[in-house]
Image 1 (tube, rainbow, N blue to C red):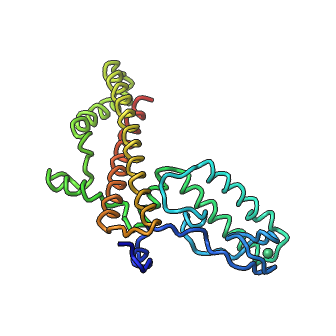
Image 2 (cartoon, rainbow, N blue to C red):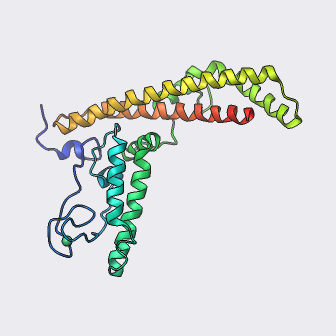
Image 3 (spheres, rainbow, N blue to C red):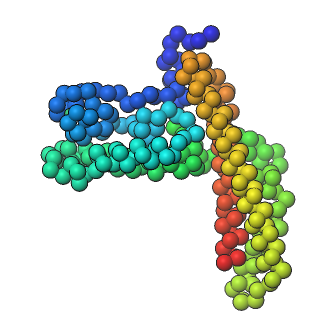
Length: 256
Ligand SMILES: [Zn+2]
């Protein structure tokens, strides 16, 4: 049954799309303006405290057309740039600076797939420094330390750590070990393939999230359990990806 009161699933849950930022009248000419500047007279408008998705008038979806985002960014940049508004009053210049910096932050955060996902999770109230629920449970079960090694890397990690250590020592002493080097190059290739697989996993989790957003948009009630489970999946992929990225960085460093 669709909920009659939309605020029910809006409360603290950012699944539903905020739609376009509210249009109000321009402070200068009184025309109906776009959110950030007036479409009639071009004047910069006072900045509103909105999240980055809302700033661009986007729904809280993770699949995002970055080409469109880029076009929107450049178009807004032109209107909001402090240089363009240099002849304006001090108040307008301040707005222009503030809007421009908000625009830059929003664009930088949303264009990158990882920072976009992290940002959305923060909006969902997820604390990123914490392990995902499943990873924490796994760590508890196996008695491992909090920074749990992704299960699919467990076998490799210990040996790899020793190899990296050895390669570092060799490098320091200027005594290269060809066999070890070849092994590490092989591992690097393997880890890269794994990394690509994780990005695939991330996209699958994105799709799952976006379906929730669409369902909420259509007026369906989103179960809190579904929302949390999807957030947890996203967080889990992010954590494993970060672990793998650090590992790759270490391997690449000794191979340089
Ligand atoms: Zn105006």
